[in-house]
Structure formats: C-alpha cells, structure tokens
Length: 267
Image (cartoon, rainbow, N blue to C red; front, side):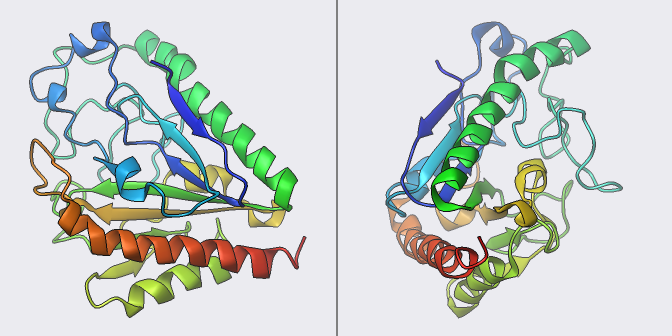
C-alpha cells in the first residue's frame, strides 16, 4: 500500500482528501481495541462522492486511516481550536471521547508515523501545489471532509450540512469563499455555514497563503447527506448522494471559474 494516491490534473484546483483512507498496517491494527478497529471517524466514501465532478482537478488522497496518524493536524501537536475538544495528531479516542487503543501510541510511535505517513502525504501535496501554481500562476486547494452530524463531544446540537472554512478569511481569496457560499445559499435541500465550528484544518491554514498565490478552502459535509446511516457499516447511498453530488459539482466549477477570472488578473 502506498501512503498517498496522486492523480495529476491540468486545472488550477486540487482536491485534498486527507481522511478517507482506511489502511492500517497489521502491527498497528493489532494494537487497536474493538472500537478502534471500526475506524468510525473516517471521512467515509469521500473519493466516491467527489469522483468525476471536476474534470482536470488534481487529487491528493491519503490512503492511511486517520487513526494511524491524522494528516490534517499540526505535526508539532498544536491545537487548531484552543479551548475546545479536539482529537490529536495520533488520536487516542474517537470523536465521542472513547478510547481506541489497548495501549496508547508512544512518542517513538508517533515520530515513526510522522515520517512514514504524515510527511509523505504533505510532500505529495506540496509538490502538486507547486506544479499547479507553476502552470497557472496560482493554485486552489479544496480540502474535502465529512463527519457525523451529531457529536456532542465536539460540538453542540446538529452540524449544518455544508461547513465552509477559510480560516476566517485568511486562507483564501474572498471571491472564492463568496462564490461557494452563494451556491450553498441557493440550495433548498442543504443548510450551510461559513467559518462556523470548522474554520479549516491544519492543511487549510498551513497552505492557504493568498498573498503567494496559494488559496485553500475546506468543505466539511455531514454524512447523513450521502450515507445510508452515520453508524456502521457506513454504506454509501447513491440516491442520497445524487443531489449532493450535483451541488458539489456546481461548487467546484464555480471555484475553478472564479479563480480563473479573478486570480489570473492578479498574477
């Protein structure tokens, strides 16, 4: 198993998929308890949900589970949301604060996983961002995520269906965020919020530097919009996914068109 799948595209948009992987090396899998082995905090079926929606998009996908190491966390372990409940670089519990290991990974374990997985994913992502920017003069990283709609440990009440994050306006040109939000607002099927509970993970914040021509925006979807159930076995529902895929396709095309029209004039 290669840690990362890279599908190079010719357009300016890169789809980051850091949490859809389910691979766990055998020695690590043996250390997970029965709950941990369910991998329930995976961004289930995100590659299938986005497949074919934007021809020419580059895709960078982590194949390893976030329980091995979370590719969307600061490798130094700094919290993205100080004062709020979060999961770690190498999670020790589920999103419901339930332990997932027989014995928690050691510092040596974490260091090894940073080198073997986290660093490999980000080296691939950095290389694709550089390639796309060299070709177009700018690059837009659209980070694809999904999560259960109700997780009391992480947030109150029910999460909106579409959660747009640009680090409170710092990681992406406002024209792009506005274009995404406007399309979401037109939908009568889905609720949305901009910079709500999820303002963008470490990937969005680390790479999003509009002044350098690199823009990053995160989309966190609730899984009830495209799964049969938000509980195991987390089966994909083609009927539920169909209208969401149509909306996401419109969003991605708007991101590309807005970038081509507004960012190209700045470069």
